[in-house]
Length: 339
Image (tube, rainbow, N blue to C red; front, side, top):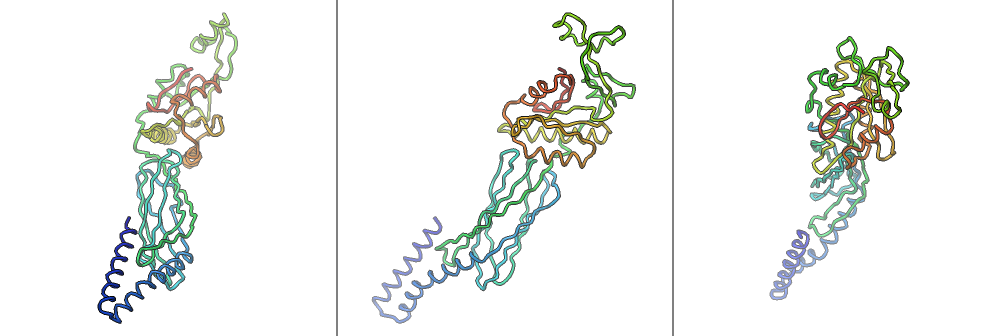
């Protein structure tokens, strides 16, 4: 619309000058009319020449960025020509592939001749995930704004945005221990967990709490869940990659990250599980320390979300029927699950 108004205004000025030239036969009006005819062509060719010779570089933070923290995107435009421009435009496309959310920013950047134009653009991500930054082209307008020339750029950068570690804090490990009704507590006040190794027939002396009552009824004889005490990867944590229009997955990841940091700080080894829609398989990653957690979360960010709230839970219980207790992190926060 603005371009059309520029052209109409220019045509009206040109016609007015022709009327004056017709009445007064002024030499100056003739020169002015000739200039008005030739200058749009010259400026258009200059803008085309400038656009063809521009080179763009973009730098983003290499380290992971906490959600809600401002970070800078550095843009460098190299111009080796003698032509400058007041009207160059860069469109930055930002997309969070993990949460399927995105937006765009259009920047008007003046470009100086024979030099480098630098711009630091601040950004803040409201959601965790992998933020992909795309710059597909740069546009250069001529001085009159009549013609626009595009130069393909094709730049792509990724920024890893961590969940908010302070958004969901766990206060007491006993809240987890109390919820594990079928898990044998040790004498160390909840720092030891056990998992089912196999199911066998009852032997006199076995603990009653280890009897698998459902299976015993089906087989019409007592069946016992034989447990082994775990010294590593004791706690099984299932993360639901469920998402909806309210960005539920962002809350789930805040909860997952907060719980994971709590386990690490309190020396509780655990294993993260999630259902991969892409691979149609359960992903399993033991977590030992914070660096490992960050690597695993970054891997998780490349997964696809799903709309079935219990898909991870249902898949886990089909694939791991022997693990009768695990911690599930979903839309309702965290809760112990007992099969």
